Length: 310
Ligand SMILES: *[C@@H]1O[C@H](CO)[C@@H](O)[C@H](O)[C@H]1NC(C)=O
Ligand SMILES: *[C@@H]1O[C@H](CO)[C@@H](O)[C@H](O)[C@H]1NC(C)=O
Ligand SMILES: *[C@@H]1O[C@H](CO)[C@@H](O)[C@H](O)[C@H]1NC(C)=O
Image 1: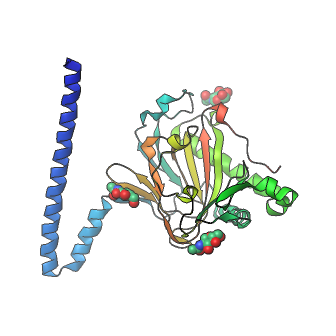
Image 2: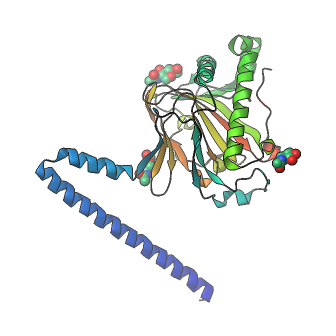
Image 3: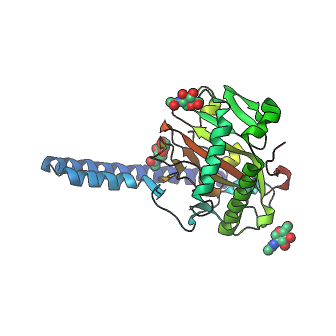
């Protein structure tokens, strides 16, 4: 056996030991809690038990921002960048060197969010998926219909101007620009080296059960793996968690805990797209959730133009 091979085995053994230790610790912790919780229950201290329960579960699920809070400036959480970006060409001034997540409530006004939501409702009312999750991509024109997609521009031809106006597209472009600016400022990027990329779409989710895999939005995923072109992902929420819909929180899945963002109309959340930001959207269990996904790339080859009426 070569020394190198021995070293590798040794380090994998020690990491197995680490895991065993961790497991041992958590088992000891769990039995500590079980023991104490049962004593407290015997004492009938149910208020205290629920306090322990919530403090304990808090360690696993942490709310980065609740629906009722209003953030007047971005709340930023830095995360170490994953190695993912190294597999791609480097674009100085854009390729993530600083990674993380941020949420802001003052990039888009409530009034604008309402307008965009009406646009989403209108566009998506033309069709929609049979299975709970529908999208409308203003750039490609892709619209969910039944168990597939149609091209809204081809399908509705001239009538499309009864659905969308030039003003709608102006608003979209304006909002997209402000989101791009917020991302550039937060991560220290050169605004003009970031490009809009596809897909960029409106989504509507309700509690109907999935009919095809396109409807299965709740699986954990990494945007850079799903769409190689993505470097920064942003989401603009158009409805309120707990008011317009239940479930449907956005969850960053870190190894030790889940960190959630509660949607609120006009709230923008953005993050670097690599595996440092594994995430999912919880299943919506009542009501309807509207949002817009706007994504950016550093690679001019994947750049798309702003959506416009044909
Ligand atoms: C940002 O990028 C543009 C376009 O490549 C370039 O002209 C400009 O000098 C850059 N600005 C800075 C501050 O690096
Ligand atoms: C979800 O939306 C679709 C499309 O509008 C609709 O047919 C379905 O009834 C809705 N499901 C629920 C549970 O409201
Ligand atoms: C995070 O949420 C997912 C999906 O709900 C769950 O499978 C996972 O166990 C949670 N992780 C932690 C650390 O609680």
